[in-house]
Image (cartoon, rainbow, N blue to C red; front, side):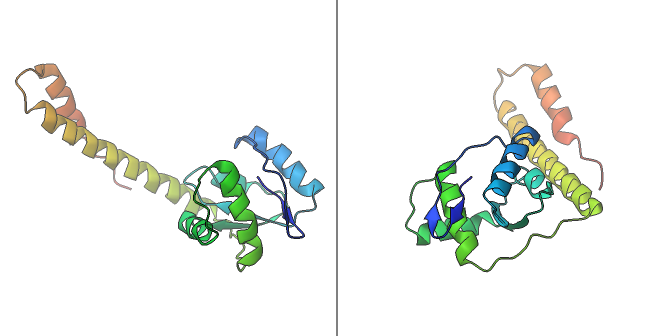
Length: 158
């Protein structure tokens, strides 16, 4: 986290992205009288923080937008502290687009879609492993049978 105010960049501060880490973050932001926050959409990791209603306006940006902005600022290194230092001026210089809270159904659909995608990826990996194990005569039959069972298992329809 970096607080950027009056053209000055605060010192980067690292807080845990857990429910226990969100409370100190909210306290710091309120103490600093921050009115809006910019988060980078990072899979599941940003969602709990974005959903945490701390009374702050939030903007959740695409990681590609953050990367391109960092490149425009000629930032070549990527660390959490540098990412935070890039997001602060992004929030000030770019049009602020408030994040819209998704409804419960949208969140459930998102979770299901991600789970199905993960299962499909796992099935593809298992099929590739099955193919590799079948290419040699030294692979025990029980391993081939196990991979064959897992490779043919299909996720339940959505």
